[in-house]
Amino acid sequence: MLENIGFISTRFAGTDGVSLESAKWAEVFWEDHHVSYWYAGWLDRSPDISMCIPEAYFMHSDNQWINEQLWGTKHRNPLVMKRIRDLAEYLKLTLHEFVDRFGLTILVIENALTIPMHVPLGIAITEFLVETEIPAIAHHHDFYWERRRFQISSVPDYLEMAFPPRIPRLQHVVINQAAREDLAWRKGLPSVLIPNVLDFNNPPPPIDDYSADVRQEIGLEEDDRLILQPTRIVPRKGIEHSISLLRRLKDPRCKIVVSHQAGDEGNEYPEQIRDLAHDEGVDLRFFGDRVADLRQIDNKGKKIYVLRDLYPHADLVTFPSLYEGFGNAFLEAIYFRIPILVNRYDVFARDIEPKGFCVPLIDGFINRKAVDEVRRIFDDSDYREEIVDHNYEIARKYYSYRVLRYGLQTLVKNIKHRTE
Image (cartoon, rainbow, N blue to C red; front, side, top):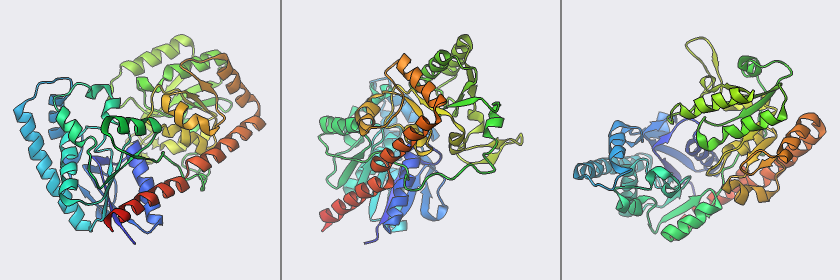
């Protein structure tokens, strides 16, 4: 039976994890003959299949004002509570319109009932699901209890009510085992674990004319080694470990290239990292001003690349993150058959490492074994090919669209069983 599936979040645009994974879900749904539609405050989906409500965006001025009053204090301002209620009521009306306009039969809530970036939207969705009893799936990427900024709050009752809610016809999906256990312990809710995936049955296309000049645009010489750090410049990404790796390699051909900018987390860490690299004699290059969500030409006539343009040129990917909800960069490096050095962040150590990937590992600091392993990857081309092929096959088994399709089919069957 064909289902009309409505995806709901604050944003479906760009290369954040929610936007990327929801697009993969929609692709797999489509292959099973289900049609997807989109609701958010910021969208890059077609207007024919989407509904953009600016007030639903977490960066909307109304919501930003509300957030300024909610976190880091236990004082409860009645004016703020009234504004939350008013905005929630308005958003609930737009959800009714979204469902009616596209004849939706199932909703997929992408992180909007998980992390309280938009409290009025979470309340609106919760009340809408209770009032309509429409079947829904809540896809949880990172819970509020995982973020320090949400620990002190004036709205603990709203967090208990809606992030996430306990609703009989709402199925919960998490992306790692720790989240599954936390959700059961904190909320008493069962969940299905569906990891992030890539289409490993269809390898990436070769380098094309547009991206052929990436190394030259970065300023690399022909024999330089591109060490790609495919992350934002924020403390939890552990870029100082990549600098330590290059310091110990003592190979002037190695250049660290960071693909993204700092975002909204300030300039202090980027300046610290730049100073550290200078003091350690490591060549560090920030390329984030030349990487965006879409290929384009900027106002200076320079090419803007997408992240996937950089991977095929890399000799090594460094991913020394201190924390990740899953770690898409890990799968992307495997997908493009690039060796990757990984810090054993909790989710990797528990969910990914046991699968049997062959990667240089560190555990909080760069050790001699990891340095020697990277040197071997650089110097032994046969070994390099052996490990990247091995990793690709492991990922095809555990993190392919086949895994996603099985999980989504199970969720839809559960919904049909409950409604019969």
